[in-house]
Length: 184
Image (cartoon, one colour):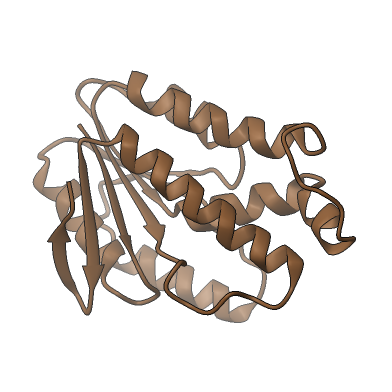
């Protein structure tokens, strides 16, 4: 089964994902997409590490999430991806998409094939995976429209990605103020 858990920053989505992974009764591998970019991010990562059970595996996958999932998914395993939002940001900056957006150039599959191919690969791979997959992602569509072009691009693509991943998952849960609401 595949589940998407979405919510705002500090909504409790990661805690819910961790509890769902633990409740699966399966061996868990935590797929971390974050990278340490500054001291504050290092502290955030440390908090997540402290909460995880010692027996969980860890795979760092800031890029090529589809390949990582294919490699580690198994019928008798649970993969917890935290989080899709950081992965998408990593892919955005690793490709030409951010540069084009900043230059007010069109960002399309034709102009940014690497960026859109990574997204398509993830969406296409997800339904083929065995085992239990729990994916955490931010819901970014409830805020204001960002002023910078690259930020607007990110918000738009995050919204589109969440929709596509939700379509590929059997369960979708929204978390607000620590409270889960089953959407699907």
